[in-house]
Image (tube, rainbow, N blue to C red; front, side, top):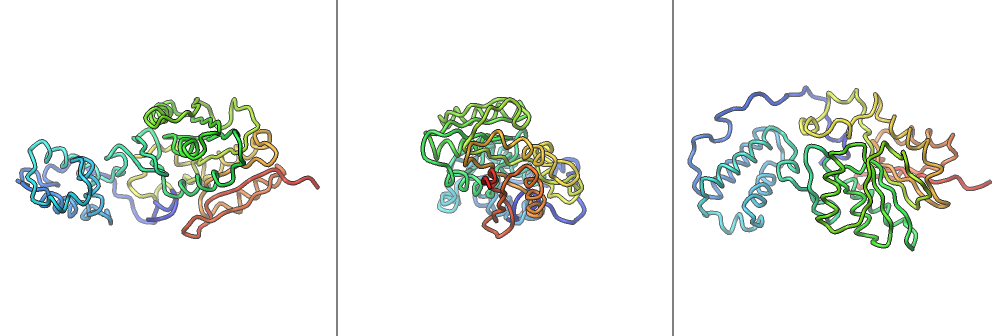
Length: 309
């Protein structure tokens, strides 16, 4: 899998989904057994350019039929009822149109949490799990305060709260729709996070031991190079200006009063943006260290007050 959000983009012409193809996915065909339908589904997804078509078909079938992936093979000859076939056909057809798998399933695993996701929020990425690891590892002992900006589904805030129950975690998003999903996730997971609607740090009162943000960082000039899946996700959670930096720059400018002595601002960013972020920090008298992700690409900024001379 490519790295980060911009890693889902490629320099190739887009092929937007066309009208519903009545016979594109086995319409009118009799698919009596689990394995027969699974095999046809995998072939269909592969034909639509989904490289992991077999694995994704397995996830869809396991989730829909409430089976494990092993069950799919040990019960390969299980007959499927008409309503099961219709439901599976619908889900696989949605994925074939390149709707994100997490939207098709309605959930996404993130840092050991099962999160509800949908069109109102960005699908949490594996790189953001790495960001959570950095944040948690750097938190000081004690009941400190953590602030998640642009929370979306609540992924970062909820994962930090699960890892450090003693911390007070606040989270904001500009989108009411995203906040509704984040709050529902918090209730389902029984995690106490204070959510509110705001633009970046508006209304926040520091100091915080950690401020963390996975803001939109894809430039508008990259929009035409993106995988079809990104067309289903909220544009305001993906794109920021021509170079992907306006919201990051705005937050960096607002950061100094938010951070406690020794406090850290953590950012996820595009793999070509490290130098620009360091340049934004310098006039604010902020130290910035760029940290690579597991793929070796610059991905995270660790920002703190400069030490007194």
